[in-house]
Amino acid sequence: MENIQTPSATDKNQVFIKMVISNWQVQNSRFNALLDKLSDEQLAEETSPGRNTGVYLLGHMAAVHDAMLPLLGFGDQLYPELEEVFIKNPDKSDLPKPATSALREYWKNVSQTLDKHINETEAEEWFSRHNSVSEEDFAKEPHRNKLNIIINRTNHLSTHMGQMIYLSK
Amino acid sequence: MENIQTPSATDKNQVFIKMVISNWQVQNSRFNALLDKLSDEQLAEETSPGRNTGVYLLGHMAAVHDAMLPLLGFGDQLYPELEEVFIKNPDKSDLPKPATSALREYWKNVSQTLDKHINETEAEEWFSRHNSVSEEDFAKEPHRNKLNIIINRTNHLSTHMGQMIYLSK
Image (tube, rainbow over all chains, first blue to last red):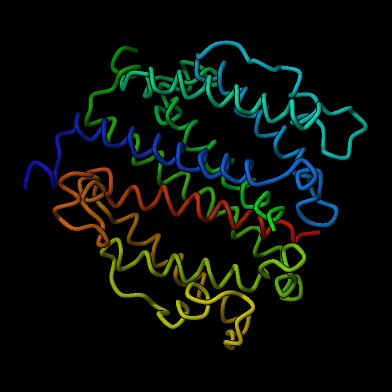
């Protein structure tokens, strides 16, 4: 059992990447299951009086995860226009929002594109710097790598999922 | 830069333990800052109509994090009696709840005890199995280690923090 109780450092890298990615996948699966359960009418409601609607949170999640594509070196955003409405401005702005059916589609496309790239990413690559940290800062703070973005965004998704759950009966 | 861009496997172990622990610490700091901001009166309110109160969520977090002590081999629970009220039963049960001032104290003590043990845990130890997985299963699923519990509980904390934020003005 010794080699299993204390796997080699290289084995641990594989194990650790699996830990982070599987937690990311579990939270995304839960979010998608919740989304399937919620009608467009339910998504239009506020998650709590005066708080964000499900529509805004769905758009916010699509925008934030879309922005992970360039951040992780996976390519350009699919829907850069979402940033203005769902990140830079609050729910109660006067900015027109896309139809809920469109937002569901955007979320699905962003998730599938991210998953494709995540599955293709080599172990070594996860420990390289993400594109919002300079080479100089990364030299001092090597934990600011691509895998750390996945941990951070999994927590962000969990936070808003806790709010969207309030829309389900 | 080569050795920084692609640190050795052993360096990486240190880096990703830091990644997980620092994300845990950031979310705990945010939760404590929110808790300091909320009055006992605000905590007594429902986070959304018909949903959990702040008091229940505070007790739930204290109970779940207290249960991490034996799970991670850090010792016995400090307040095992919380489990019945805040994990096994819902907010709307008829079970009497401790005073909010007591729950704040329990949460603080649990957090400090956990932090002390987390800071004393050696790198190698984080990759050993936690106490709810058998040696046999761990041999097959080495990602079910102590560090994975920290990732999982950080997401759990994030989920309920997203709900407790609704109590702040």
